[in-house]
Every structure is written in structure tokens, then in C-alpha cells.
Length: 231
Image (cartoon, rainbow, N blue to C red; front, side):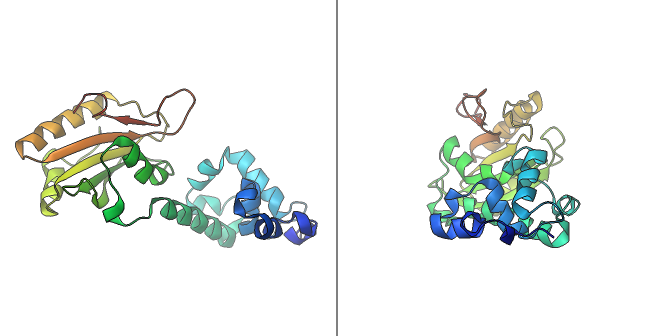
């Protein structure tokens, strides 16, 4: 069995990390630290390199369900669990902050708060973010999985959650796994319906933000209905 210890000591990922810091390591080297041992003819670093080649990027690899990771050659349940835990810790660390410190008064801040979590998903997730009078985070929850076109939650049910928690206002957020945040006709219809219902109930519908992924083809990796004058 090929082991990470077979690599010259000064080139091993662990020693490089301790000497130079984690930022000095490549994605494959970081993966190798969790994989640790290799298989016949392929050490941990080579396995990490293969995973990135086969799945395109670290982000795409992180989006795989643990059950799928276990089926990848040279991983198995133990290594797959370690990788899944590492990806989840990264996602949580990226969004962790004290709610009172999270001001969500513009789409840039909304994107920074929730994009790391939503971009890691392979399915559409519709999130309701409740806000205080200072437009800081009160709470966030998933209200539906699937597109707004398939959303079974009516505007009344959604706004009931806002009232139950005595929130000042709210933001609706959902992701497009394709990476393109351009709203569909269903997105536009649902937003218009929700805006009208919010006005009747005197609730502040701060924004509806669609989360995509960064691309050279788009100016921004999100779409804000408020920024586009659709609120």
C-alpha cells in the first residue's frame, strides 16, 4: 500500500502545512491530509489529484453526498466521512457569525452570508431570512426544496412565519444550481405575488436574491430583484 510517508519529508503535505501554513498547500495536498493512506500504485496525494480531475473542482467535489463519496475508488466509508466533515466545517465556518453582527441591507451582504452554503447544493433550496428593524439577521430557515415554480408554500404560509417570529421584515433567497442567477418567469411571478401580499400585511419584503456562481460571463454571481427595480 502506498502511503503519504513515501513522499520525501520536505514535500509531504503535513510538513509543508506546518512549515508554510495551510494557504501554501494546493487543493490536492489538502485533500491528501484527510485521505492519509493510498492504495496499490496511488498515494494519498495522487488520489487527491485524481478526485479533482474527475470532478472538475473542489466545489463540485464538496457538493457530493457522503453516500456517493464512499463509492469513489480508494475512499470508502471512513475517508468519505472525513472529507464530508471537512467540507461541512468549511461551509459552517464561512457563514458563522453572531446574528446581531450580520447586517443584510444589500444583496452583496446577503450573498456573502448565504452563498457558500447554497452554492454547495446540487438542488434548489428556498430560504426565508427574517430581519430585525436594523435589518440584521434574526433567523434563517429552509422553507422548500425545489424551484419556486414547484413551491407548495403559499404566500400566506410564508408570511405567517414572519408574523409568528415577530420579524420586522424578510428576505427570500434561493439558488440556481446551474450557476446562472437569471430569474425565470416563475421566479418573477412568485416574487410579484409575495410583494403584493407583503404590502397588504404591512411587512417589509426587503429583497429576493437568487444565488448563482462566479463566472467571467456574468458581472455578478447573484440577481437582486430590488436592485433591478422589481420590488
